Image (cartoon, rainbow, N blue to C red; front, side, top):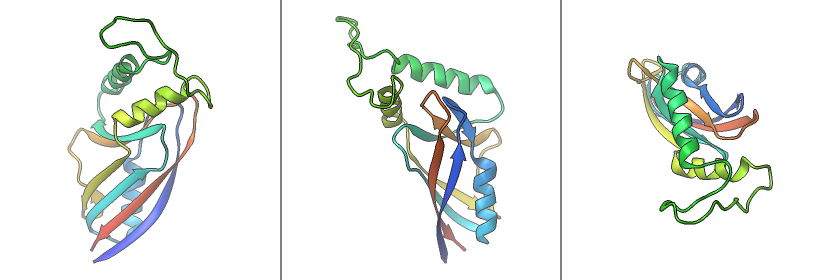
Length: 149
């Protein structure tokens, strides 16, 4: 059994999805491990990780649309619809700052993924994505912990 702890830096294009699958597979190949588990952690509070559809880009657009509706950019309104819109009080880094934190809290910042023969075990239509919740591009750091043989 062997383990490796490393980091991967990813450039996002702003709000949306960045396919991490090729870079993660490269890290697995570079490790020399053939079979094991990869733990991926996004080291930020305004982006998340997801395994999702890799064939139809409409899926990713619909996910973005849904999360925007669930966590509006402008502020929060009671779910009951009674009462007005209240702007977020935390806006230190811009108007998209607090919505990004909420979106991250509702999604996931870590994934545990199995790999075999030096590649991630994913379904035919699956990819691993960094989901950027900020409007502008960011440099994101991911912690990768590989354990295997």
